[in-house]
Image (cartoon, rainbow, N blue to C red; front, side, top):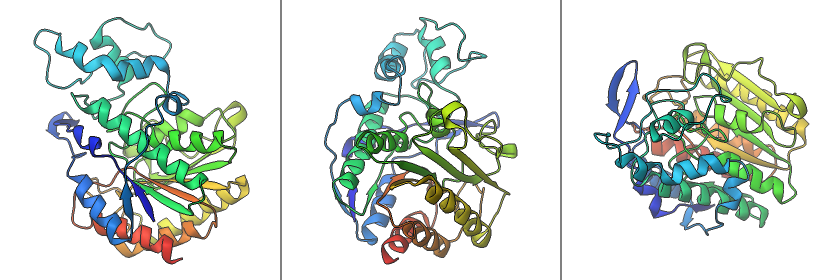
Length: 340
């Protein structure tokens, strides 16, 4: 399987992460790259660098206002007397329709949903090349590849059209799906990350030309809390084109795979001719976030089930954090797919 990664993705090196009122080391560390790359290579992946398709495919799903913010906020932040080393918001608007301030502090609050997406010197460059990797992966699939793997880091599925959040800045899976749609395909996004893909849902919620399906730990007591509930089905043209399948905490392989069957049936009913898998590996029983309890062999069964759709498939890396088993889980899901 061909795989895509750019070395400039190393440049995002976040230091902080606030959880439950405590400032902790950020778990979305550059060291994930080597672990994931080794895991992909063990499944037979051969890595190559992406092409640069420019901002156009990114701006197809993200607003120009937001992209301008991401490109320029770090140097603006450094001009604030006494500012911290990373852009982290401390105030947020009540609604997206509230006033748009000129202040860097105010704009950070407008464009960053939480304190888990700090922006530092290398963040924009890393996010840009993470997105370009996803775009190149989409082009490989439209060019005839049965499947491809994209090591997108930083990840993307919590990023809305104009809002960063949850370690994510540019929505790599959404960008790839829109690239595929623009080339005449009918894409479905299948998000298997332990956290609901709220940014992806928001990006396509009023559209019926891209199906979004997410299997995740129930957000009633789990991040992202405000999105990912079963009753969220889409709006306007998108009614019925969004499917959320929340699971109770610690759901094991059997429960997960049964729910995956429901997700795959909806993708088939949508008539999808290509699938973007937002490949979170943090549903693993040993992941630091402890949401679900999928085993390493279980990931192989997930990969095999997805292969059963019989359509070109693009795997775009989302979550999965440093723990024993992270690389093995990637090997397992990709090998399970290819073996089927």
